[in-house]
Length: 354
Image 1 (cartoon, rainbow, N blue to C red):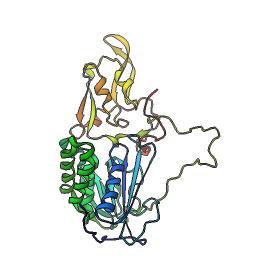
Image 2 (image 1 turned 180 degrees about the horizontal axis):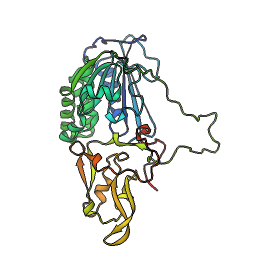
Image 3 (image 1 turned 30 degrees about the vertical axis):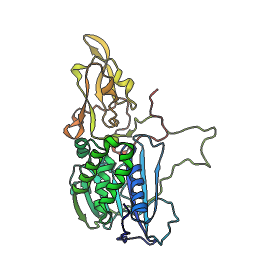
Image 4 (image 1 turned 60 degrees about the vertical axis):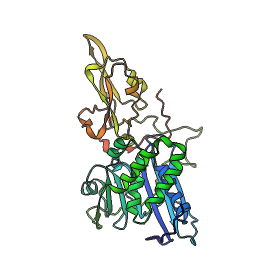
């Protein structure tokens, strides 16, 4: 289905309409960027560019995806990050305060956030300078429709853009997802439509209470000219100091202490070492006693649920649980102020635990 070219509603000084997606690996932002690029190029006949910035694309690592549209007579000859987006999608509210996800955002920007909170709450939490903010409870829809987060976000981004035709987006999903995963097509289309139809939107004018955040390129202290010789990797080889909670897709492991036999299978299976053991007693004998998971570092893979022999760990729907009441602080973590940690696992580190 090729749609007639719709004049871009707004462009920057270069004549581009720009989109930026902020996420971490596992939520489908990279695929979302490719689909939006295909929508512009093949269905709306724009000149289009799309690329992503990520490490190993491992689940839990930071991901940014960039999309540029230009009118058919305008070439796109740059491939630099989008600094001042017209439309931005933030795939998890836990990204707030962890990375500069709102860099370049002001009252002219349409912002879509996956959250159950209201626009006023999110505006305060993200300290958003200004923008047209849409909040969509993607986690809830994901669980109810058994679909992926990127489908809900694509629907919401389509609506927030004000000009992207939903029927063309549906056609792309039928062609791409339907051809590769036909059994998942109906649930993905339901999630896409609910993302388009649901959500709460509120416009906020620029407010100096929350200063404008300009885009700055992230640079490491070590580079090609000053890195240690011999290929030494100086980055810490663990996610123990990182917040990977934003990679969860609606489910968390729930720990039932009374059923635990202290076998340690959960600790063996967990790629991020979230289960905390301390010296204690079990059935009157000295033992390493399981206190439960540190949800700050749990990405919701549910491997522990699969291996637990006594059903001491079960899968729960995250939005139905007050998991922080069960939260057990990492016993070996030195850092006290968790909010200053980076979001997402280090992209260099292999997922397996040794």
